[in-house]
Image (tube, rainbow over all chains, first blue to last red; front, side, top):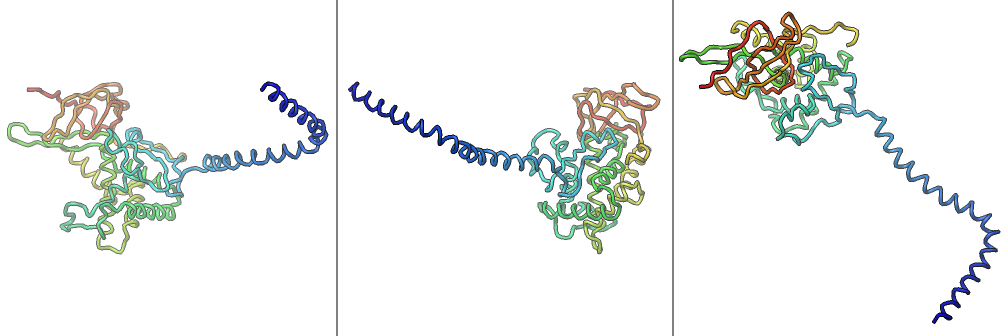
Length: 259
Length: 76
């Protein structure tokens, strides 16, 4: 068995030795061609993958694919903790953080405005009239996303400024600082002034902003997007005709008298 | 925005230092906090105030009037 095993080994050695000498001369010609052939596919793969990654890294993510939120400044430090500006082409978090505490602090302001707009009406009579939106908007998020997108485009065309910055300025101007509450002493109700926390200030401002656009578009030629654009531009310039600023002034006037 | 002057907001800025564990108000919607005033003539004072809405320590609020102070909650 040992001899038989040795024999093929010797044969193999001889067989390898003979072509090795021949191959040495041939390898000089073939080797560089083989190396090139091996190198080419190795180069292609990483470049193909990395080019995709580079594109993602260099392109800035934009809101609606149009507006950057890099230069947007929130000047009021009390609202700055609660205004987030994560830019997305389709601003929707699908309610993922819904059950966590302070989940609204992680949702972008634009999406919160969209959520506030998703309602069938104002909920109470305004000026003696029941106000309904044209086609109830509850549960129709995509429809409202397009409304807000149109409104931002109108603002950008009219003023030439970044609509996200305009929205932030409008919210800062429309956020109230004082409110009233009822307190009962011995069977008599008193109205007493109280402060408002930062989270609630933003809630109230957003709600008034959404309500005003519903009222503006009710039984009118104006579309919902037009009414929203008007409201944002008015509130950003601190115009007293804005519904949200009217409400804020009224709330603070009552609170001041009840101190 | 950088060219314009810094904006003037009404009220004085205050930071929440402590939150009382008990709620007040007719429907339990009001909380009582200790807040440190950040600007104005009462700067640095810590006062007790009732506020509505959700709040946590470290939040900034705006107060219309810094001179008055609310009563502590009486527990029966």
